[in-house]
Length: 222
Image 1 (cartoon, rainbow, N blue to C red):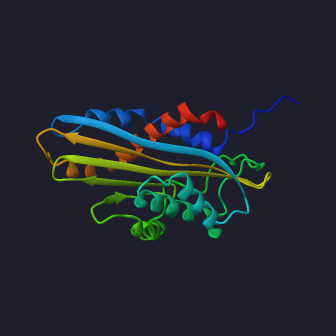
Image 2: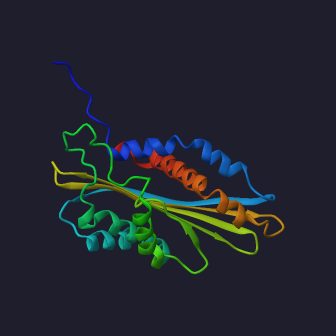
Image 3: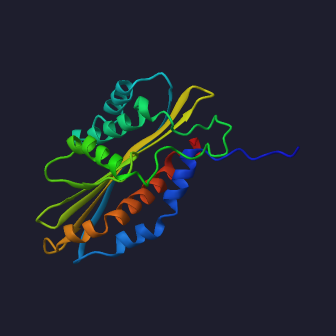
């Protein structure tokens, strides 16, 4: 019997999917109203493994320690995603220890039904500041957009990827954020409406940048 190639991990598959979204990133960088004065990024991702018995509270304490220098709003978003992914009702997450041919497919789909999406949206509501508006379409990411009258706009992706390995009784976790800030010349150029129309592409663009950073920093650990 010939050797069979083991299925790629869910984490690796998702990162590769994000890397395939390069066109959305190129669109995001090139298309904009008005002239750009400055673009800047702030980002951090961690890849770690936890024993399966840890609670949501344990994960939240990890976020507070690892991201202690971040503002409370970003950490609240991370905690909301952790709660959504470690809830007892969501144990159908993928497992690299499963013998199923679909073991690399997560239960966290991008095409969440409307009733579940409403529940997710309500769950995340408390994690946002009053001057943020947002778009959520799955349990693995939160994208928030913030536009100021002076022409400065910020798009923030908070992303979690969780892979359960039932054979080893452990969870491998990627969690982090990427914040993109754009400053336009001569003040506001109605960037809020422009970004709102392209919010799905902005989400994919930030995921591409997120994956590029992972590739540089710690993707080999996957």
